[in-house]
Amino acid sequence: MPERKLQYKEELFSTEDPFFTPFEIQMGPQHPSTHGVLKLRLVLEGERIVDCEPEIGFLHRGLEKLAESMSYTQVLPLTDRLDYISAMNNNTGYALAVERLLGIEPPPRGKFLRTMVCELARVASHLLWLATHALDIGAMTVFLYCFREREKILDFFEDICGARLTVSYPKIGGVRLDVEMGTLERIYDFLPEMEKRLEEYEGLLSENRIWLERTRGVGVISAEEAIAYGLTGPSLRGSGVEYDVRKHFPYDAYPDLDFEVPIGKNGDIYDRYLCRLKEMRQSLRIVKQCIEKMPSGPVCAENSPDLDMLISKRAPVAMAKGEIAFIGFPFERVNLVPFGELYSAVEGAKGELGFYIVSDGTGKPYRLHIRAPSFVHISALPKLAKGHFLADLVSIIGTLDIVMGECDR
Amino acid sequence: MTEGLLKEIFENFNQEIFEVGEFRGQLYLILKDRNSIKPLMRFLKERSFNHLQTLTAVDYSQLGRSYRFEVVYQLYSISNRCALRVRVPLKEEENIESIVEEYPSANFFEREVFDLFGIRFTGHPDLKRILLPASWKGHPLRKDYPLEPEEKPEDFLSLKEFKEILATHGIK
Picture (tube, rainbow over the protein chains, first blue to last red):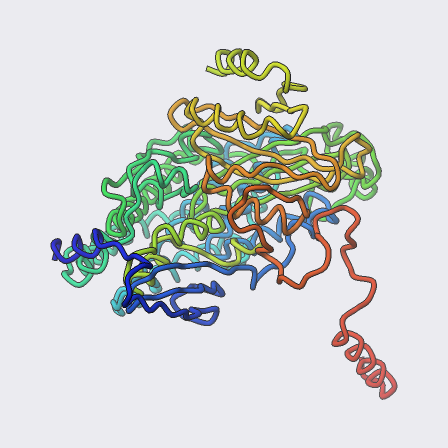
């Protein structure tokens, strides 16, 4: 096996070859393995990819333009629709950016709850990735198993906040609702079971000969190139770069928790697969620590702005309660929100998810830019795919773990 | 790290820097001119700023500044754990040099800025619209672009007529 892989990796094609007869095909946007509406214009020579050009934008909804006409709190439900598989991470990222702008600090229980749901969402997202990635390569059983466990995590979300996918559970200054003790206990009981299930998936795939042949030595990218092409998250760590936003820019409860950042070595599809599996184990570890260390108290900061609550409605309520320090959002030009701009990133399930906010002092963001990991990962797709077989392209798309809702915004 | 770096930047690019500041613990640098962006980026890349976190633009036309756009580069050095933001003011119809050679990940970001703001990047390998179709008119993230179009597409108009017909029969 290794000889064959090496052979076609070293072979170069030249356009001066008289037998070179390239032809162009369009893959997608309805192809099932493109995970949404990604369209690729491919130039093939035989079965080998000579050129690959991604075309995106089929799911563009103008989120950034919409956000400019809404108040800071009204933007929060829009961020659910970015990476709809792990919406908790998007909400946390946006809430964190606005908190840093306003100078709000969530209470400890809010921080721990947010970290817990973020890690559960990461496990759910990685499970969906493993399911579809294995299905693309041809392993049907893993697909069914992964969906079974993902269903349980979504049920937990339903218990916590009433929604399964578009949750809007974290909000500016903490989380929306407190969690019942029974739910926490059920999540705690689920963790050892999930560990066992992970071993099951590994037993099906890690030493499976078909899996090894399809993943080892395919889609290789070196550490320097991976950084240069902007890969982040598990796709970058598979190449052996220890860059994790949770460690480099600590937020929420992560500084208080003990976890490792798994890294790979070879930078191929197999290493990225191992990285994500190890990351799921670390996420379970974080959830366990969160539940054990969960402090009591309020879940949301007192001066947090409510959803859809303007200063004209908020002020009488706050006066009646005797609150002095509160933050409201007037649409007129009043300097309640500080002037300035900031970039704030979180470790989403797919990679570094960043929010760049420019404030002009009013209650609406003057400009909101979203740095979506999938958007950058797709730009690295031609680099990874060139020289591989068409069948390998499907596993390369799978390994980058792209979501088009986030890419097109 | 940051003090030594700033000193080094000032030694090399003293003429080009307009302002250095900090907001919420994040360091930013505003350049006077767009011409020095490429040498500065090459300089920063050599100083281990290898990760381009994001590249975007802001339309400042409603805030009454002397320039219209600002192109923003957010850089991070993974080995030194140090972040820096570079902001370049641009007037209307001005071009800026592309940094795809230094940072290949800037490719899609620059295409996005061109698509949504209409800022042209000279030296970009394939500058064309990315999120919107090639036949689209206007650049949506400019502040003078309306959120709702003045002329509605035909489908919506016929839907409105249909609703009026339904309303005459008492159906809402």
